[in-house]
Length: 264
Image (cartoon, rainbow, N blue to C red):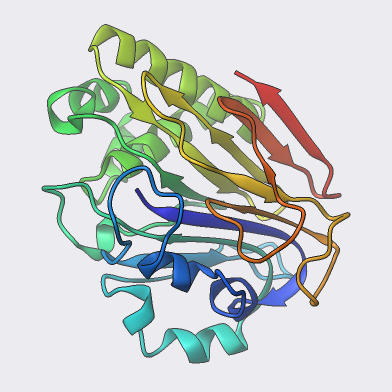
């Protein structure tokens, strides 16, 4: 199981969510408290962010080393400021390579995505069925081997015919559930997506345990830094009024930081 986070709000430095909090993503990489599988998240990491003043494609920084061993990240995270950040520390599924192409977040044009979860026996169950549903262009965009990237590819494919990112994610989860039933397999899909203007995601599982996912609303203070923000995270980053997202739900954090939560 990976650990992930998403931030939307007033521009902050990357270090404000990656390293400064008491239970930051770096701490969660070696001392997670609520993982349902695995012990560490030492198989690489990645962070993606958007320019706060320009509508450009997002930037990403990834490494196959454990996040606590990356020598460049501290300098980078003290320099880069963003209003929208996604990050992930990876616990690789057994048998899948520790390779930069398998590190998250995944990107397609303006869309960034991170995933915490897995598809049971992915190569033997949903690997081919997912690929068979993809358009040629999306199929060719897959660079790694993970179930996470294939879920992201399915989302991008659905986005071509969906009116919103939220709708595309909803359709993706419906397809995965149908495939899971057909092929008698389980999966979990805690997902956070962004286009730089909103956060869209899910806390969801089919035939299995739903991983933890929390949010901190703008009415609660974000440490001592800024209250005009929303944070989504696998585990709370610091003491505060964190709320657990409901089991099997879809959520949207809008540009004005209002939050819609829909049961699935």
